[in-house]
Length: 257
Image 1 (cartoon, rainbow, N blue to C red):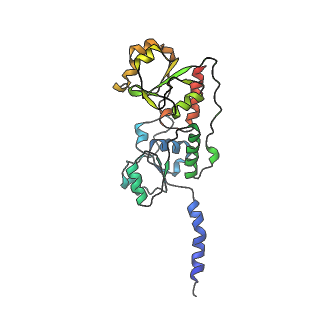
Image 2 (image 1 turned 45 degrees about the vertical axis):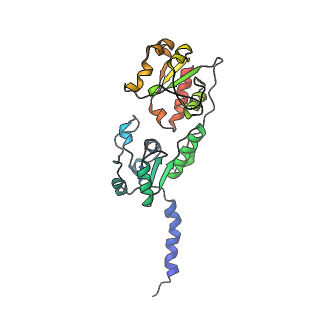
Image 3 (image 1 turned 180 degrees about the vertical axis):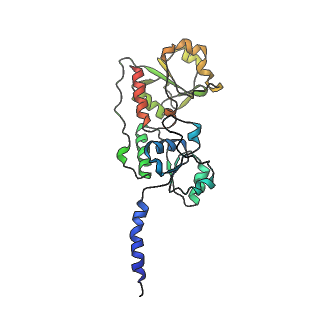
């Protein structure tokens, strides 16, 4: 009995849309921020590996049970991922080589506004074929005090965060006024801060003491801003945007009260 070739192809053609839309079962990350989104949203059984950065910058809600790849092209290919996620600036060479091999890599652009954080999370959920309803929404701005409270977001190497940044939007959304009025990331002037101190300083840098942190330990800063007005938050919340960004806004507002 002869089989018509069209009849043989028809079942395969009908399967193609299903295969294209099948949810990924072997998810792999190339960067820290993708690691955290995967750990927050994805089913552990569908994840073949997170990046090495997850071990270098551990956080308490991601346990040791998550597998980690060594960053080599050979191991990544051997893991046979069907969905690779990467940050905008993560592992660019490996990313390019994977794409030349036909492996799709979903690149998540780094958000620069609170609304872009929502779109960033939606893009991630779409890549994993999870409901977009799991994405966060930008909360209403927190009420501001009658007298503006100026907050200096101080990082390592005497760098402060100014206008036009995601961090600026976070501070302003929480009800604070950014101490720095110029755009971007700025090298701070100790004399200016001493003569016109902010109402509070938020120390957003890693816990370990290093030469990069010496500016924050200068006695002039201690005299200008009393110890009780030095605020600290978990550094990881500033490293990568995500659902935890809204919790950070709430925490900042509580300090304002």
